[in-house]
Image (cartoon, rainbow, N blue to C red; front, top):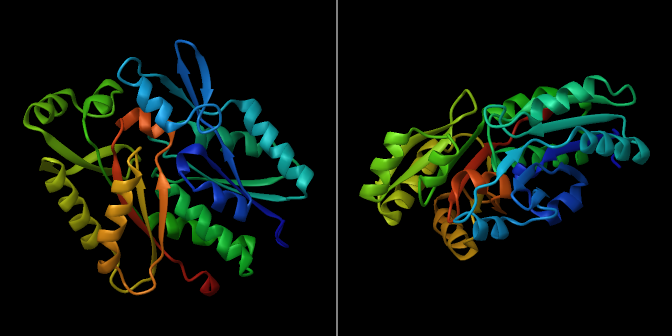
Length: 290
């Protein structure tokens, strides 16, 4: 436990590598997936690869964590001696997780809980927790942290290239006409998060190579020119292609830029289907000036 007694909480859609969760003692709430044969916990009782195997036959219903799971994690934090909780969760435009934790945190007298809507997903969330953990290690106070988090969220951008629009369409995440046209023409969309926290199209390419070229171009154009940042690359069941995307981006990044590699979780994998590739960044805040 850190001297500031600040616990870090997120959900399974943050896609933080397990070794970093262990290193920084980040608590993770699993979202739920309901298949015809029962309920599964994202990343705990089912993996993304197992979800991809099932998707052609059945698309599960996804759900926010159970209130009992939130209560259990709060109790674990109290038992460990934590007094404050920074919680950052999947975009409220896609999930009710943020509001659940916020409301339950208000009722938890033993902890001071501050919850934030990431307005993002995957390592768009995860980078915030990783940076927060490092800042706390460096002596960042609770008050500085609460000022820095909105800056980090505002300085975050992620882009995803999906292999098919089928799952976004079936899940009601994208317009039906766009989905049909894209399927017929082999159009591969580039999606990101709107200011409302919903998924939107920002570009497209005919064929996968053209789409990935466009994704990398958007990433480079969006990266800040005068600020240091953390970068991230994620994949949906295609780790070799994820590593290749990282290797293609690295030479274009400023010297010393760290790239976090992650895997898409079960919940977001259900929304977008297999074979996703994504890249994003988050500006490193000058928290000592706060």
